[in-house]
Length: 421
Image 1: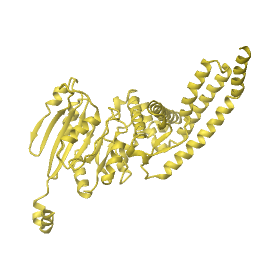
Image 2: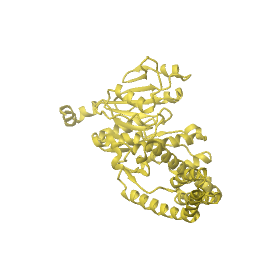
Image 3: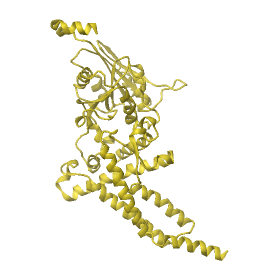
Image 4: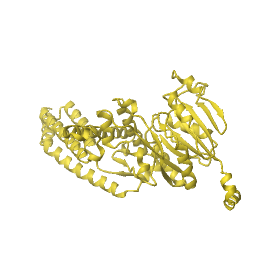
């Protein structure tokens, strides 16, 4: 503090001597794209800074693993270290993105660490953007950058954009104090923080960013840094494999329901349409197997499931505005409708994954939702509860009407069996 006061009192000295910023960069590496990593380790700051790049090799069996290891360099104020995690037998293994970030954070001696994914292309000024934010808000516990996806290039990527599933990637451009940020581009305290990523989430990612930010915000606010930009490619090149990555997020999100740090950010609603269908289908199969229902009743019940799915598609599609569509899809009524339907199918696939994961983990997690806004938009929670309740009651009526005669079928089958006995 005395040094800072001295520098502020002497303008000439203050301009000549700038405090050195200690900022590290941690990159968990699984893809082993050497050209992409070289762009990351070539980042420099215009402000005097001491930067260490911690490249955590999390795929030691990759053909390019040795090339990644050879990235180690030592230069004035900038150096690159390559780390590997070993099992009890001394063999390097894959432990997942969260474990790799924790390993890098444990090695860092810097005040702050920039977390980057190994497939992002950061802007050349990203370090300056984060350094400026650290100086403006020294009490902040985390800083959220802005990560942009490329323009959509096929039906699937157009649907992903329309669904707004990756909307959190650019949240720093819309909210000054975002509730959380994706770990693809995030700056956190290092040396003075003991908060680490929870390893119970999927290795490939999903939910760990919400959990981490929910705990770290207790030690200071989370600030948006829209100037800290990075480009993120489409997962799996925009192919159908990207769907599995999106479903992995839903799998991780379900685990947030059971975390103590997120208890105040989850809420209960009535089941949505896809959950009602997933409940009805096994019941229909069970009743058909034990011959309690006539085939006609089964078909009526299955018809109700189809009706509910169609109504859910219409409900979600009607809520996708034109602002989520990109050219050339938005220029045609047929194409825009198709993209909306594909986007809804992605949303419903995530809902199905959440239901299945909640069912397999704990019955008490069923129908609990994560408040993505962490209480910053209470109207969204109230609207979600109201909309789910209205749809659930309407779908219950659809089931009742479509499966008319259910009680008579069960009673007649049971009574007939008793008479025969």
